[in-house]
Amino acid sequence: MAGSERKRLRFLPLLALVVVLLLSLCLGLTEAANGLQKPLKLRRNYYKYNKTCKDVEAYVRHQVELMWKKDKSIVAKLLRLVFSDCFVTGCDASILLDGPKSEKTAPQNSGLGGFELIDRIKTVLEIRCPGVVSCADILHLATRDAVHLAGGPSYIIFTGRRDGMTSVASSVDIPSPSISSEEALAYFTSRGLDVRDMATLLGAHTLGRTHCHYIEDRLYNFKGTGKPDPTMDPYFLNEMRKQCPERLKKDQSDPMVYLNPESGDRYSFTESFYKRVNKSLAVLGIDQQLLYRDDTNELTSEFANSFLDFKLSTALSMNRMGSIRVLTGNEGEIRRTCNFTNKDNPYLK
Image (cartoon, rainbow, N blue to C red; front, top):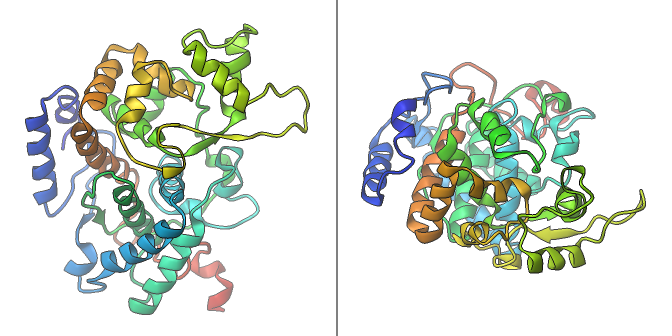
């Protein structure tokens, strides 16, 4: 799908979105949007087509379901994990690699989770289909299945990614959640994504938690004024201050709050996030900024009024994000365990 075509999706009616989605799912191969690596060699049912692991999606789904029954927060962990991977060096599973200076150790990646599930899935697949399925593909398949269990869409994942060989903390440039909408859009655009992708992917904040230090500026010292963010609903501001007391000491605790209190510990994937943005009840500053651009305001209203529109757009944007700088063909490798490259893997020596 070309970049110009993608831009026209911003305000198309629901019927047009349905048509676009169906067309995208019927294609055997996915093409890159403007700004993304091309041509991409990802395809639907890559492992089944190549007769290397025809039941890979069933194996992944089963493990995700087992984890979901024990820990509903797994969906938020996987969403954050896949975003943290793709937005840095591309969707190459570099976020999964261990090391004293790997991407995992970057300050922006503090508190990442979900690694145990990915490792468990990889162990199962190495028994069923040894040396075949990449960790990068596992991450995307598992995230899709978790999102669906939480009430979101079950969309087709184009597979065939290979795993990266390096992971460096200094490459992590994920911005603060206090940036402006213009800065956020520039960041998304630098990855080949557009304003609809940004508004849609920020909707992942319909579930999950964040540390108080990410919203402390909104609550107590907005843009250095010594006052709270004037766009926050006064009642909501007081509620957030109760959960996030002003940190006056260096060693003071840093509690966590739900990004969407209406989802809370149920970790439900719904359109309620956008309804809260419309009421100035967003927790993160970048989320509230969706209300103050004409294009993102209109998209926020669209998603708040139609969960189906939000789900369709999520399916499209997750696949577009999943195509950022992927490795295919002879690039990279298929890791035997997700936290080590094959040459550094102590279990292969």
